[in-house]
Image (spheres, rainbow, N blue to C red):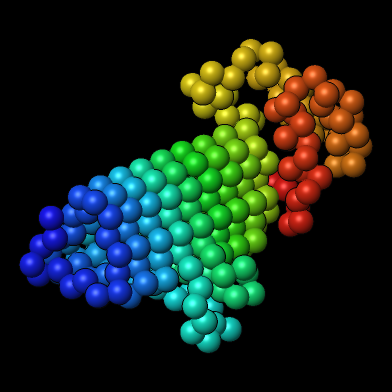
Length: 256
């Protein structure tokens, strides 16, 4: 299951039925879970932990030190969950001490070619990164986000669950959950209705989110005024509660 031309450090730990292609290099303190497939010409350095049943395609670079001038070689981490697809030429960096030390990626994510995940990012479950999407350092991506090709997310931004970006989107602000945004710089274009329906959100939930969206983006109210009115309807909808909490907790400000 390991090609004879692969270079595996004795300190690496491999689970059951791991496959590794020709000319791939695994450094010390790399751990690969069961049934993960690693193609040819992949470089993985540690400390890096990769879970089970992942597929990592050729020419990826995972677990290199962060692209950060303050990094002095400290033992920081990259952690990747289970059942992720990581296509050609993706680059995922380890964390920094100042950022908590860990870049963490969850389960069931799909990274198309040439995606970059910088130091200290946190990525949830079932996201899709179209080709060329790049996250700067300390970005937090919630579950089931879809990034259009060549999306660029500025450092320390927060991207809410079930949101979607258009191609070539650039944002310096947080993207609230459930939104469809695009542009450079990003502006909202309504709710991600198609995505919500595909994920079996009820009509009542979608309608509540529509009302919250209108208050925030269409009413002409100041942000504080809009959030106050949204709070009055939030108790009837867990989705609106999440939407409101996200806005209130935003440190960079939201796309608006």
